[in-house]
Image (tube, rainbow, N blue to C red):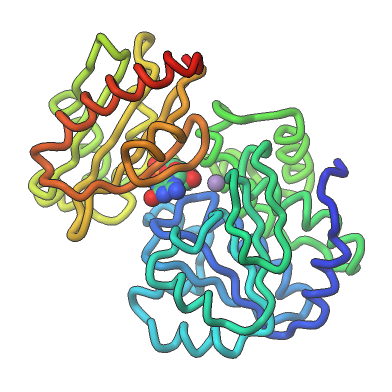
Length: 343
Ligand code: 5GP
Ligand code: MN
């Protein structure tokens, strides 16, 4: 696979730097933690000091990728992270396309004086980076990082450690919803190479899918049987996870990860939404199948964006109003799309 251009520039930047800061997005998912730990392992194997930082905590089921608890959270440790960023020789941002996606950490990164590199698969990256590796056609940032590391490995004479291979396989697997979405021939080739490199795919499956807490499992059952509503006229499904429900199920960060995909298993459902009430805003998660662009839906109505079939955003309104707003927005959006001949 030879799609990644301009890798000598990246190799040169890495070569010059001793302290490298790797940055992941808010509410880190498998692709975020996978790309961070994959890159961190490789850079350390190349003799660099690399730290991975994220705005807030990741779901518990991903902790097997971070056995030493090395990923640092800005929410826990702002002063220490500000110092690390200020002292860094190079910053590599992965799996997000805009500093807005890292909350307050965005201002800290913006102020850093060292070179900044973006490695990502979301369309429309911010133009504030010195080097941009943006490949929206790839399954996941982890796939992109794999193809980059394969080449860097040759150029730098550094082997990709097994821990990195496991992390990259995991992020690709979770971002494609277990090989269901956005999978291309290159994705299978990557998976095959990683298996040859020693990744035990059944073990990874067990860690990801068998790593649920009892609370998460019960919450999932409750959301599907009691909370999910189907809106037949728009082929849509919606779940609203309020603070009240969170308390009832002793909610921990990441417990609702993947719920938004579940409703798409219903034959008639083409678009699925999950709204999660937080302290400052309502987190929006959108998924679709077919030609329905949740990226445009989110940009237009939910203060966000993302991919065509997986997007997210934020709402600022009482949780009780969200379902009504969703139904109205869908109606308006579908009308707009039809007029533009996009649906
Ligand atoms: P999730 O539903 O898993 O939180 O997010 C799905 C995708 O939507 C992410 O990969 C990301 O690309 C995008 N996304 C989520 N939240 C936001 C947001 O607030 N703003 C933008 N621009 N994209 C988001
Ligand atoms: Mn991703």
